[in-house]
Length: 267
Image 1 (cartoon, one colour):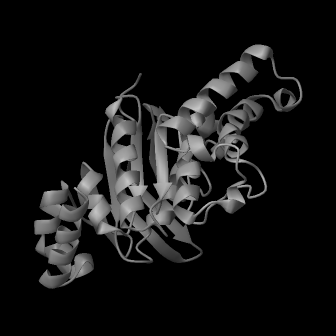
Image 2 (cartoon, rainbow, N blue to C red):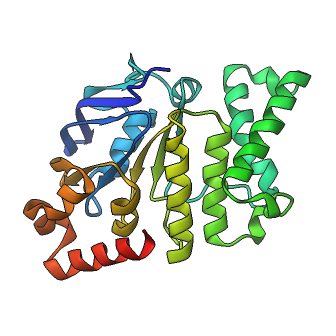
């Protein structure tokens, strides 16, 4: 497997005459959880949209596993190993947990050949069943597998989203505010699962997250954005110690100490 994961170089993203992101470069390798943090409007979701092909950057390049995918469609990037979740959960509430998670692998197959939605082989159906069961087990959802998603809590639904993207067989995962709506216990469990995912050496994660306790606890490297520019990058410890980051995002020392204290609680 190519260990480079995803890399972006000198990204520029514009909306009309407004520049949302300017000259941003990052690396999110396999085996690491990489975070993008910053205040609302800093450009984080715009970068995600450029990474998975929902928008075309005005400048710069995006590479996935060493291949330039800047001009590829989202479906082609998905077939090349890129999966994503969104800020707003995109689940089929009337379908069961198992059916929702299975969509992760089914959609990849259909993206390559639409006829597979109707004419799938026994081997494909067996594979879908196996990876679905493995993802459900990994995310601690076995007891909820037959239940409709609409009956689950927000925390459980977030885990269904994660299980679905894992079932898709994607090697690089883009997770957009995945802890939104979770309580402290659910956040701790979610972080544990993320660490187990990258611990297998076969996945990399790029995460946009506002929960600083989660970021500092589970991430290996952090990029800090402000008004579309990268103002700092480093380890979580270096990020917490940065005066630039404190001033632009984390706030005064009391706010930083609160984030650090919360990290210690979930560690």
